Each structure stands twice: as C-alpha cells, then as structure tokens.
Length: 239
Ligand SMILES: [Zn+2]
Ligand SMILES: [Zn+2]
Image (tube, protein in one colour):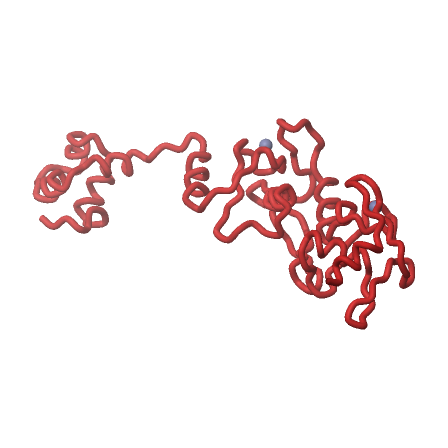
C-alpha cells in the first residue's frame, strides 16, 4: 500500500512537534509521487487523517513550516479565515459571560458575518448570522444540520459564546420567540373569545339585548359582541 511508503518519508512525532518531510520537494513543499503524479506531501497527510479535500480546496499550515506533515498543524484555509474573522469581532469576555458581537447586526439584533464555505470546489463567500457560525466553528462542522435552529440559552441575540448556544428545532424557535415578547398578554377580546362557548355565541346571536349590555354580561368588549353578531368571529357556529 502506498500509505505505508508515504508515512515512511515523514519524521512522525507527537501532536506538538512538526513532522518533517524527509524526501524530495516541489518548490518549498514536500513532494510525493503517486500514480505518476506529483502531490503535496502535507496535503496527503491531512487527507489521510481528516478525510478527502474537495477539488482545489486549500489547507493552511499553522506552524508555518512548509515541510511539516503533522495534520494537527493544519486547517482548511476557509475555516482558518472564518475563525480569524470571527474571533476578531466580538468583545472578549469570560467563558460564562455573553460574547457581544461588535460588527454589523441585523434588525433583530443578530450579528452578521461574511464567511467562506469550504465544501465547494471554489471558496464561496456568503453572509450568515454570527451565532450560527459560532456554533459551527465550535462543533467543527460546515453547516448547521438541515432544519436546525441555533438558539440562545441567554436570550441575547448578539451573543456568540458557543456555551450559550444550542441546537433546537422550529417548534422551539417559535416558542422561544413567543416567550421573548416581553409583557405580551392576550388582548381582552382574544382572551375572552377563547373562554366563550358555542352556547354563549348562539345565545348572543339570538338575543335582542344591546351590544354593551351583552358585553357587560359576558365580561368582554363591545366590539367582541359585535364581531360575534356580524359573523366575523365564530363563523363555524350557526344559530
Ligand atoms: Zn508543524
Ligand atoms: Zn450569551
């Protein structure tokens, strides 16, 4: 197997040390011939450890040593740029505090960030919500799983501390949003509308009493009675 032949050409050490390429070079990088083709040695080492890269996908050697083949010293270039971009844009705080996004925000207060996807052949710059990107970077994933919503434990849309984020589904998202509407109470009409029974509605429609008297009787607003009588509400109840 060629893999054995490949690793023999590397001075493999531990996580912290640079694993130097001992064989030939192509330019400043280590070069490995395979099936008659020249390959960058560090890239092969990365792929053997992290999985195949997309065509033209670039990786960065974080230690700055072009001959180093230690996969722990490498990162996909797009991911590297995203991390750098991300970590420079929030207010540094402790692990438990909210990390306030300092750059652009949308009208709901969520941080906005440009980032690179690195699943395509070409790097593609897209816009995203900073807290979603924070979640992905923390989990080491490209994208939030389908139908997933990244939600805040801390109820602070501009917070990008991964410790305050969790993945929920759409139901949770809606519940969270409803609960967050502080001071929200059902309007009188809406509230009493729900308490009324079909029998009440039938009685109101048959009654000769004035709207205001019926309203007092049922403890609802005049317009509520009017709505019932005119058929705007409780359409399904026929007298
Ligand atoms: Zn290194
Ligand atoms: Zn927070």
